[in-house]
Amino acid sequence: MSEVIGAGKVASIHFTLRTSGQEIDSTGSGEPMLYLHGAQNIVPGLEAALEGKAAGDSVQASVGPEQGYGPRQDVPPMRVPRDQFPPDFQVTVGMPIGGEDADGNVIPFWITAVDDDSIVVDPNHPLAGQTLDFDVSIVAVRDATADEMAHGHPHGPGGAHH
Ligand code: ZN
Image (cartoon, rainbow, N blue to C red; front, side):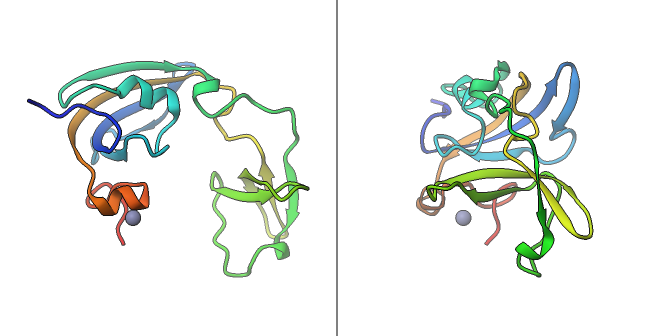
């Protein structure tokens, strides 16, 4: 019996992501991507579409914002002086960072621009409000190791190295 994708499984997949027909991301001819099912490694709508699938299956999934990166919030990006970040802080456009609201709740922000003096952060994920069209082919499915379950992500080629 072949393994099917479900909680506690690591799947390796090739995928192409498009929004409005435009390719956003793809594993292309490179290595497949690994993810741990049930650990929020991928957006909920894609995870749901892959549940129960096996190696060799192809899946097309159109994932709305609610099951993707969320609706776009009507909150403008903020410019934060660079000296509010640690000097050794590596800043990359597109990178998520955690902020705090007035009640101390952690809220995610994404870095949308960087210049010499400041960093622009946006509470919207770059793909918020968009419908995500995924083309996925499943390469392999296996049980997660105890370490992977504890860390919440896959290890080995295509996963985290540490
Ligand atoms: Zn790990």
